[in-house]
Image 1 (cartoon, rainbow, N blue to C red):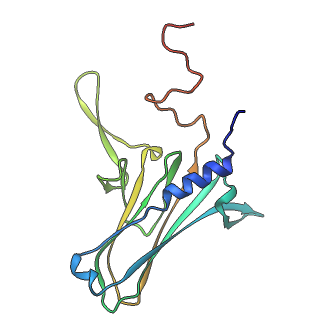
Image 2: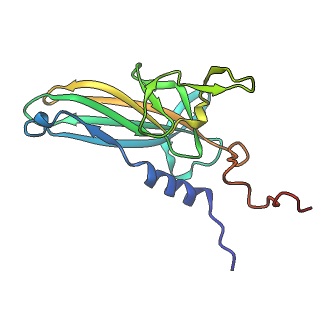
Image 3: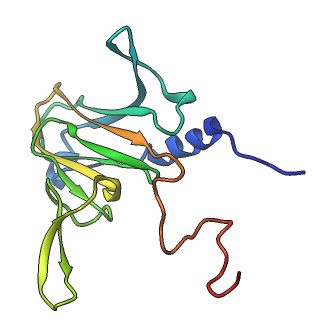
Length: 185
């Protein structure tokens, strides 16, 4: 019996993997501030020329998803040095113009962040190095320095991604399943 994965089950696995949101703040704020986060993933649809957000359970390649993370401080003191971080799932492409608020940083590995547009150094065949823009499809995380969050306050961040079509992302480390080894006809 052959098992095939439906777009809905693939999306469900993708969404479960994405629910990782990192929040960090100064250790002194732990005892006084109580910050919680909630991530909402919605499919962006266009109906009669207007955008509508709907549940993302039925999203498929080519669809647009919006990730919105809301942070709330229910403690009695401000949370200092608050950083909001939202992973960008593999198999999706970040829409850089969708980032709210402005001033986000991005990363290709989820560890090293830099301001957008994200740039990298590339060695040329002549030995020189040039800077080039990192493709949005290579960005795997976005973060915002929210600085502080007042007691009783809330803040939100959001981004949009497009679910990649199967043929748009090819990795040299992971050739297509039907690829033939080199030298074999």
